[in-house]
Length: 452
Ligand code: SAM
Ligand code: SF4
Ligand code: F3S
Image 1 (tube, rainbow, N blue to C red):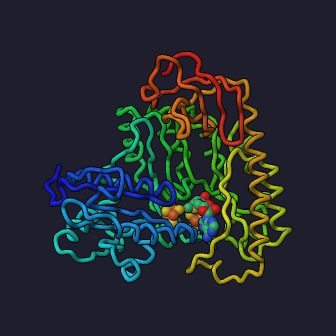
Image 2 (tube, rainbow, N blue to C red):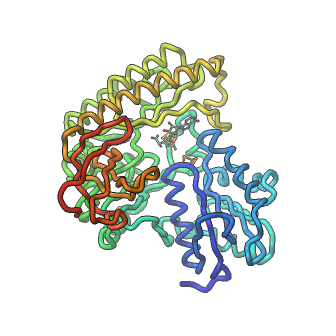
Image 3 (cartoon, helix red, strand yellow):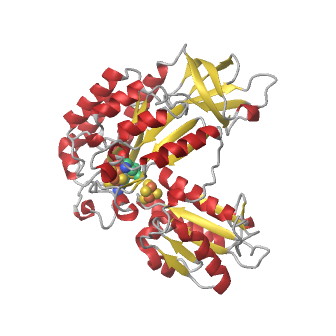
């Protein structure tokens, strides 16, 4: 542990947004831990409060202001001063501009400057000033920094950062920069190390994992990466996100052939209308997407498909929307994240006028949600009467007598805690569950046999 003036200070991190941010928070935590800081459960007990922000939609954006101002009413910590740091995508987008509206914020650090967070916080404590760092840094990338994992049985493994796709509605490429793949062997070694430390499940992370390696090798090497990671002894591999335009046949083969790759695929479609897909700059058609789904199902018949869909892209007509509905019905998603389009300044779509009334968009959104619920329910019915291996994450928030786990198809699985066993002892274990209830968003049943 290095000597740091932060040693002995307490910290609290609140994270918004996607898994990228959650993982970045683990790196920030890791760095503060290595300075001798101690994580606490709430901002009231913390000398250092870090907000890891998201600006993918407006709702995420506005939450930061409420969170920061609620810190003002907290009693001062024992040391007298509380440093508030804002990181993540809003910090990257707005930089020093945030200081004007957030008068109690001391540190702003962008997505490219995570490696500097500890020194910025030290400076803020030392001089009481406000410190901002958002430019690209050639210091160590975040992925080689200390890492504080919340769980010892599963982990996110970023394989690349950034995005080159510039979908016309999306702010991510502007706040995360261009695609940068981590070295192949570094990822495989990291997974080997995780396996040695008891990790059983990993999720490979990137905005478009299918193009992993393009910047390093001139062509994507994601299929090869899956095979090498699959050879490390890791038991479960998930990955997200996959852009349909880059899902190669060899990746589908690797998914089908590597036993540790779970039968689950998140393939964001965004819209079922080729006209809207073109305006979105997605670079595939409805037909190409459906053809891809057929090819995946040919190789992995029980695959659980999930997706992201945006409703209300500027100019989307009823006819376009019905194309989305019919595509969702045809695919039969096991899960979907549905979003109402949110205008993001600086993106090309923000310049497109949209005469569609808000009520119409909301009504369409609700129709889509219903289709997704029906297909998720139908997908889960397939598990009825089957024995499903669930990796136990803990107990249900609502009912501590029920275990909460995840199936290889990414379904939530509930089961009563077996007699004579402490639920806590099952966390990170795989138990078989005989499924006798299948609802829209979970399966439930009884544990059979011994945990492993
Ligand atoms: N890179 C991932 C992909 O393309 O699959 C997506 C990452 S983004 C963080 C997650 C989702 O947010 C997108 O798939 C899209 O559906 C949604 N999203 C992005 N920008 C949006 C916007 N301006 N309004 C509404 N939803 C948006
Ligand atoms: Fe955004 Fe598109 Fe990149 Fe996904 S692929 S992060 S939706 S620009
Ligand atoms: Fe949000 Fe940034 Fe992720 S904008 S969705 S936290 S990449």
